[in-house]
Picture (tube, helix red, strand yellow):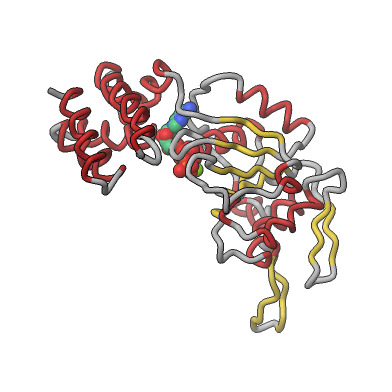
Length: 274
Ligand SMILES: Nc1ncnc2c1ncn2[C@@H]1O[C@H](COP(=O)(O)OP(=O)(O)OP(=O)(O)O)[C@@H](O)[C@H]1O
Ligand SMILES: [Mg+2]
């Protein structure tokens, strides 16, 4: 029965079927719901590994909408987003790209790291993200009117993208933005303990360490330890790996190649796990 239903559902693969664990840090859930009520396009800003992807998975589940995620890169073309003609045994057939699939059938489309895409690619979202809600498929000669449930969400990390990689104002001003950061200390402890299955006591030590690494930005570290890294470290420690080894592997070595910064990180690790 489920299979019959799925066959008729072009978004079957994109449904979020089980509730993702998401621990809100502030009012982001309610704010997202308001934005979705009006199908506002949304920009999620924040450092790597702070919970943006988990949040959108959770919101898609909560709103009962399928989620189509696409990681952007500079080789991506408009055709990778909207679709292309393909040759198969039936001849030339049109294949909707992920964006078109979401627009036609009413999914949330999440473009991860949108600034990585070239500007000539990002302009295809312009008529979709204003009052028109249209997606022109030039090569197919079709104008797709967005399904009422369709919403576009994009993410980017303002921390390490230089001036060269900025969204044009005409793109940027089509979005409402939610600002993400690492969660508050008590929330981050809860998340690490939950995700790695460790005690709050161990999670608190790791979170304390991460917060100290985040102050090393002034000394040239691009970004401090993320929540994601702490979960990796905690997972290894739970497995019985020595905490210093676990932190060297998942934090120090992963964060930098610079010998001075690595030494500073090592000192922080040793102070946390004396
Ligand atoms: N608020 C939260 N609730 C639950 N889990 C969280 C939360 N924040 C972070 N996490 C955990 O941290 C991990 C990393 O978060 P996530 O992948 O969502 O980061 P991101 O912001 O999308 O990073 P990137 O910019 O690199 O894609 C998640 O897999 C999850 O385990
Ligand atoms: Mg992500």
